[in-house]
Length: 267
Ligand code: THG
Image 1 (cartoon, helix red, strand yellow):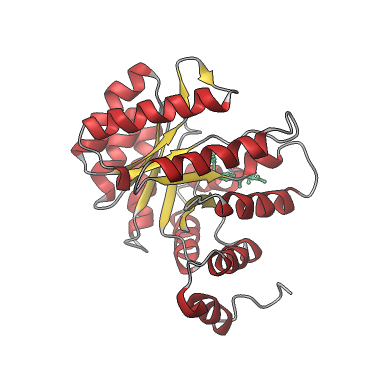
Image 2: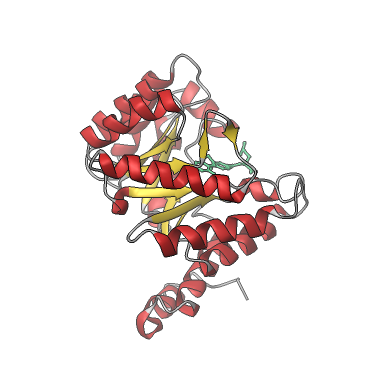
């Protein structure tokens, strides 16, 4: 699984305060810890600073770059902040995220192409988030075709079905599973990705729900996730599931993970 470390997000209180106080050490520490724990990308989000997003995005990326060259996930609803991020991030960045909203797609897709970046495509359009799984699949198809037309290949596209709270409709787990299965079996070389925390909104023992849900989605082919890589149990479960799904030759990664002591305390 391609892991995007989600912790440097300004909607989190501690990160918000650290950015406000220009506390470089706190941000650097979290960046390094996520990469050391196995994150393939470090997500950077300054979205809580409305009006100042591009400025804080620049500070965040320069700060993270003092400790790691890992690829970055430029997480912002603001196109200007994304472009500032892409200029600074260097190679292999991923834009988090584009949608099928007409104005946004028209402006942002060419920027993704210009910087040769990858992109997370959220399954929503000008109508907002959709409830019907078939309508979601239609939006996904439209976005993939439009991105391909601009010269962005499937290898650089990460489809995000936008996970909804299972507490509001008990169909939402199965819907996400079938959307992921359909996308992974229909489009060659495409990626699917999701954040987990929405699924457990409003329920107790949220981590248990998030962990279990990721396993179900992996069984349908999900190959990327926006998660907290410092969650040892979740990381151990991912390594175990990859092995059980036949993606770990000779169980080598599982055995190495155990040898490094990373599965201690999980059983
Ligand atoms: N898809 C895409 N991008 C995303 C999401 C997604 N970005 C944002 C989010 N979902 C994933 N990122 C986070 C980052 C931090 C937290 C949750 C999701 C987090 N939340 C605390 C909690 O749940 O307890 C509360 C906040 C706090 O710490 O103050 O840490 O789905 N493409």
